Amino acid sequence: MLLDPHFKLQVSSEIGTLERLLIHSPDSGLGRVVPSKAQDWLFEDIVHLDTIRKDEYDYYIKLLLYFLDPTKIRGKLKDIDADKSRDFYKPGHANFYKSDKVIEIQLLLKDILTDENIKKKLVAAVCAIEDCNYLLQQELLETSPEDLAKVMISGSLNDDTMIFAPIPNLIFTRDIGITINNFVLLNKPAKKARSREALLAKYIFFNHPLFKAYKANIIEIPDSLQYFLRPGEEQVEKNTLEGGDVMVVSKNHVIIGHSERTSARGINEAIKILFEKNVVDKVSVVKIPHKRDFMHIDTVFTQVKRNVWVILHAIGKADFSGDGSEPIDHLLKEQVSEKAEITQFVKGKVQYPKRFACIEDLLEDISVNDLKSTEKVEFIYSGNQKFPFDSREQWTDSCNLLAIKEGVVLGYDRNDHTIEAFKQKGFKVIPVKKLLQKLENNELQVEDLTDTFITMPSAELSRARGGFHCMSMPLLRADI
Ligand SMILES: NC(=[NH2+])NCCC[C@H](N)C(=O)O
Image (cartoon, rainbow, N blue to C red; front, side):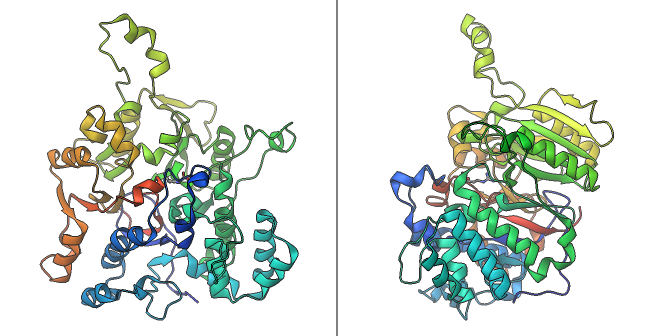
């Protein structure tokens, strides 16, 4: 059982030094996505399991451990790399890294399944949403907690028989819930492919001893009456909210994206609860075009430093594609606009929301007024603001960066123009493999890193349509 008497839940920024997070390594379910189902399962392509693990995600684990839980890795890199069977990365294996800082969600699931009562309830719930037959349900009840956790995630039994669909998007732990100060706001997914993830997350947060002291701080969004009573199968009235649309930018301020995945009604409920429970007193809603490429706000902007943000230019200031010299520039202006619309609500004054002319204005306001930055606010644009690289690189998550500490971000190595833009703003760029070697050889210390873009291998990972911001659910960040 993963226990820690010092466990603390506290995230009040996007950039404070990361100290604890929830992750999920690519499980065998990812290796079972078939082309005909890829889109339904929210993947753009099928991925090669061995490559995504060995050549890509494992580096993420190594890096996270080096920063968050160094005793697990320092001085051991050579042996870990020499083991071809990768036991270090396998939850359940005796050599698994098992960290209480870089927390694998499968372990938490296994832990709660050791309680017979919870096991019964969760098996019944999973079987209900997956429409399993009764005998299979009986069989699952007799499965060990280790195996059952694996089955519930991968959708396949130990002998490889597939009993229900995988949940390949669980690697994007950002979307299952968001830590806001010492609260967790649970996800209410818009897509069916993500409903089992939400169910497992709910059981984990409410039942794992790690979160015991925070039980009263787990927030769920209720469904709306309009949804229950609607005719037909349309999802329009549904209250939905996914973690990728929520950013805690300061102790008192949260940004919520109004997107393909997060509905206005979902946001409405979230704001009411956040104000009622005194979690924050300011919520800015950023409405972005509801389309696949922009599924959540963290696919179009993320924070790098107190005064630095990476964003997609199309949602920002000048949304105008032409220069205005041709009639078409004016005729199509409205239709082609992808500009974000911003409405800010303050507790007690909800009837008088404040508007911002563009996303840059909001982010600048956050840097200067919420975070008291004294340096000039800088925007780094996807693809260095050059067409067509801006949208090409946004598609492969140039704007979806994870700050492991202020100014030190992880992003995909394939987004050349964006990386160039970081260099132009004075950032150092270092490939993760080289960084790990330097750390292991004591040529560099984690504390020495400042203003750095760490490039991560990405050929397979980027096909899953998320970056490192999505692949992380921070539980604890140091205050900034
Ligand atoms: N926070 C994020 N942007 N998450 C990305 C999730 C990607 C995933 N394939 C989906 O479409 O749901």
